[in-house]
Image 1 (cartoon, rainbow, N blue to C red):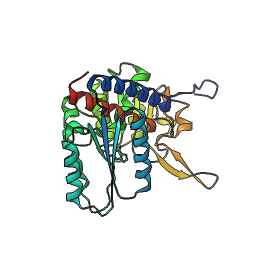
Image 2: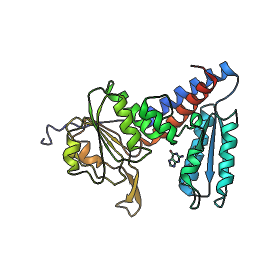
Image 3: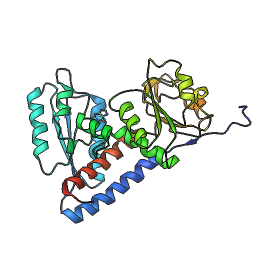
Image 4: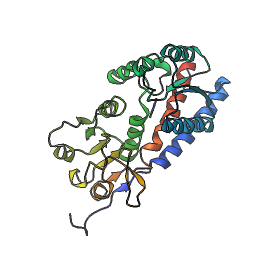
Length: 296
Ligand code: GUN
């Protein structure tokens, strides 16, 4: 393609979509309160002082309250014993005011992350991280889907409508993004390939895809000439790299400049997938509350 005939991809505005979704959730919350006389509740557990986690937890608290829900924050010191953390999770599982539980990761060294996550009641697992939630997704049972892949799917369906028959490549095989993303796309009747760091000739695998979801954690790895013209590109990467001015900047796993000259639509970083994660957490929490109360 020469520069005269190149079409610029449309940029998928995840920030605006997430704001609309949060407003929709807030409406749903108001209807839930009118019907049941109580607010949905999200409990967030933060162990230790990790600065990034503190920012995430603060943002989650603010968004939860703005949506009209109760936010229960539990901050524990970094030297918390495993049994005390498990006791807190058990208490939250039993608390009727708590519909959703999120244990912020990573946990400080010495705590068994997996054991803590698996202790969460699957019916309150709004992060979708338990093996029960993963199994429910795999087998098509109702359950909670991890927030980031759920947000990616919403953006894709908003952009493309019916995904049936499309070929999709997910780059990355993590439990919290790549694997659930592939399952969601399969559920939408896409033909799904999961690519990863050992995939041979990744560019030619990506070139066959109508939908590309990049979740590898490698800055600007996916180039424009890897893409099928018109492909829809969802960039899950958040990588901090040195900028020209001596500071740092955020970039995705996709080289936006070259990719946006070939793709049909693409999410930017920041402002693409990122804002969808908290919005989907609120969505899952309202869903959890509705299921627990048996209301639509
Ligand atoms: N740490 C970074 N992102 C997340 C998330 O989505 N959920 C949890 N529990 N921890 C995280």
